[in-house]
Image 1 (cartoon, helix red, strand yellow):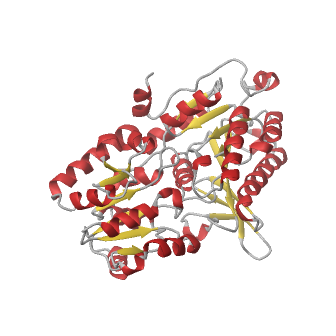
Image 2: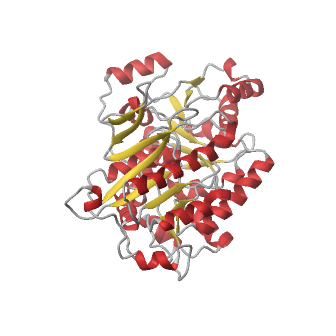
Image 3: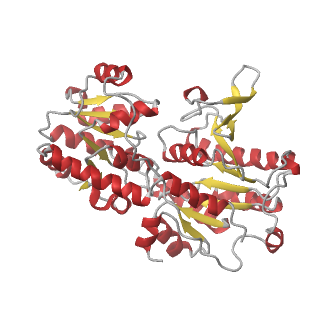
Length: 451
């Protein structure tokens, strides 16, 4: 199958090879790749347990957080799959279950805080993390994996799948992979994008990320890539025998929130915005998402519209940008906080004049897919990952001075029909390659693959 055909379908059967990372002993056991009904106290068919490690929380702004929310939602009523999801109990990006609906608390700490809960039929557990700076990410993944291994042993779960998101714990993965295989389980990896290229990391840390990626990939039984370009990179760089491509997903259904809904009307009034009179960005407030370039170029444009930034602001980075750009002197630049109401966020997206996407590291980004599904006019940084996703359904800019500001001045003059045409292309692109039901089915085939 060609890369283009794979991209259109959103799923490619894993490349299989003899050998791989799993042991011969495990292969003999693969016929029984699920925990028996008796051991989980059920009377129906066996259940495949899938442990997801690497997402800070569920349903917030990070790519993995959005992905996990939608994936478990697609399989909420799937009797043959049971998810167990690790989340952070504290620190940056921690899990706040009060912002979710339909949560059933299963276990509380002595202070009354929820430590385990059920959400969309998934078992969600929180990991407490020490304040040790960036190294906390490594601590978190290791602690979550230890919890999952203990949980499997305590509950008699055989042949689980451990799905690890991103490549933080290379020095420790061999030992964990051995424990997973002793359970009769499999270790699957989503390598994310090129974490070792992210601007926020100093050179020694980036070197660690690259080395860790190599270790994580080498031990994986299967590498699941959300981008065709990332899969090609894994195959070329590491020659891994078992890879597959499954994209992220997105919706194209219009919001059912009325234009007159007080939540939307009041939000606009509070932020000083008007329908069709603002450009928008939604995402993590980190340097590699090119907030500096977007703000600088917008300030250089002649646009009479506003630029609304929905993000969880990092005060240190914000002060750095203010010192560089003095954006507070431009009333069009509006940091409007976070929006956890999903219906409201979709309504805000739909009523934006245009959407900026500055991500340059990573694979298929959920915020880009959501923008394509909801906002007519999308202006994207011109990198391979973004072009792979949007193709001809968006307009592109470079980081060169003047590139984005000129594009803003140009699209500011577009009429409604021109913008609607781009919107139609964008929604067709999402429907043809990135629908959530299709992505959910692709993952179901991977989880329940007995071969």
